Length: 205
Image (cartoon, rainbow, N blue to C red; front, side, top):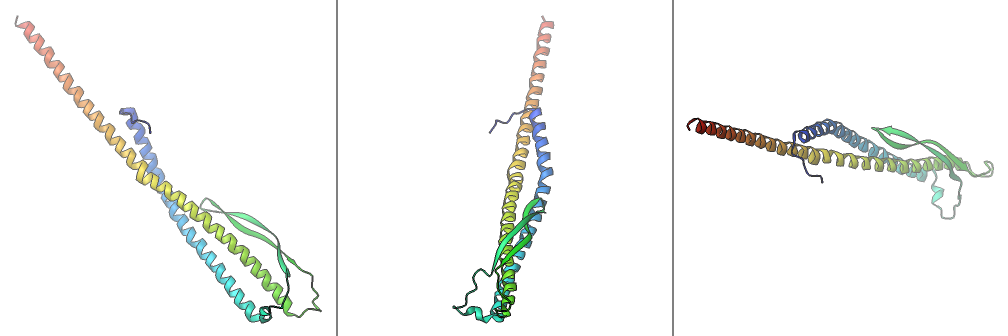
């Protein structure tokens, strides 16, 4: 850490820094509070998707009880073929967002298979989409939480370190300059007294 210079120029520099920190702090704190709200929203969205997945599992169990049969096999009936993510800007933070989703449905004869297979295909598609959305929701929560931590660290740095340090530096410099000014006045007065004394002594001879 550089040694604090005790001069008027240094004090002006510290005052400028203090004004800058005090100007930036409210906007940083506002962003921290906005991001905290977005974290709560993202957590609620993730929880809602989890609830949808649980509800879908219950629905599948009710509609398609035959799936509980261990001898039942319909492997790879529906798979995730491709998907595309976009970006969403939330309070200056880029978050992933699902934009497109493609499924791969295995060939099966609608005449040779029971009609409930069509229902199963529909439910599997829903399950694949919900699983993907759950993963993305988890990523969004993680990104927002990390950003809140980062902004909180900056807020604390400004509020607890930079601003108090600048104020303390200004105080030190001001005390030093005031003492230096008083010392200069005293020295000046002493010098004048000596001059007066010398003149008086010279005049008395």
